[in-house]
Amino acid sequence: MTSAVVVLAGGTGGAKLARGMLDVAGSLTVIANTADDIEIYGAHVSPDPDLCSFWLADLIADRGWGLRDDTFSVMDALRELGADIWFNLGDRDLAIAIQRSQRLAEGARLTEVLSELGTALGLRARVLPMTDDTVRTWVKVDARWLTFQEFMIRARGTAEIQDMVLRGVDGATATPEVLDAIASADVIVIGPSNPVISIGPILAVGDMRQALIDSEAPVVAISPLVGGAAIKGPTEAFMRWAGYPPNAEAIASIYDGVLDGIVADERAGDAIAVLKTDTLMRDAGDRRRVAEETLRFAEALG
Ligand code: GDP
Image (cartoon, rainbow, N blue to C red; front, top):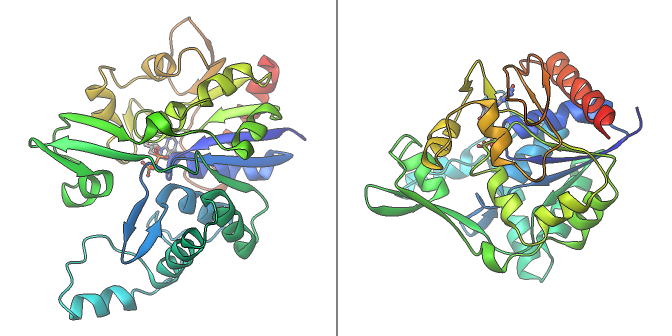
């Protein structure tokens, strides 16, 4: 297969799928959510783009975040100094974030900085931020607005969601790199990521939806629900908040207007083409199989 593939991704399901896609795509561009980014320890952390990069470089730690074999000396030292360490970051991970902060302060775009990281890690794919503008997810719990990372870590992602907002998204625009990747793609895949807080921000960036609609490439999504439930994280809670039941038909309706087909392990209604298959990616073999079946399905639609 020689397709130019674009994957829209968050940092867990979408990142795993991107790694599988690397094995079967002719070329791969990942458009990653940056609404979970956080400025902390004087550094700029981009969790979703970095997790995609770590997966693509085969450097992801088994725990599902951070770099394999990283150490945590800086966090330990900060704790000894009395700092309240609620956001854990490995030493090499922190170095990446400090370098990013430095380059952004010098005037580089986030797109350029992620490209430099890709080169440093020897990536065979491109990881693009959804925008170079600042968009941040805030979540309201117990009548208080929390940044997304505070919600996930301090409130353990389990507090009842009363509201959420994507601050900055109204003025955010897609980059020329993103628009070009979408326009020249053969296949576009919305990864099995949280549709509300990972893919939602990407689709909310100005021009993004229209670019996907205008692209000649088929757009297919992979449901992040396995056996009717999310494997990890607050996907069901955010879908419930947005008024959707946790099933593949609801995933398809969230992406209504841009989608040509959906890949899921359950029925997904009659409104759209469905590839029913096991989408659980336990290991490299699964990741490759899900990517390959998705690519074949999409190519047949195109
Ligand atoms: P986040 O940025 O860390 O929230 O990551 P994502 O939004 O990319 O991924 C979260 C979603 O990934 C959850 O809804 C999981 O159910 C889904 N997910 C994780 N692993 C798999 C998998 O192997 N297959 C499928 N279909 N979904 C998965």
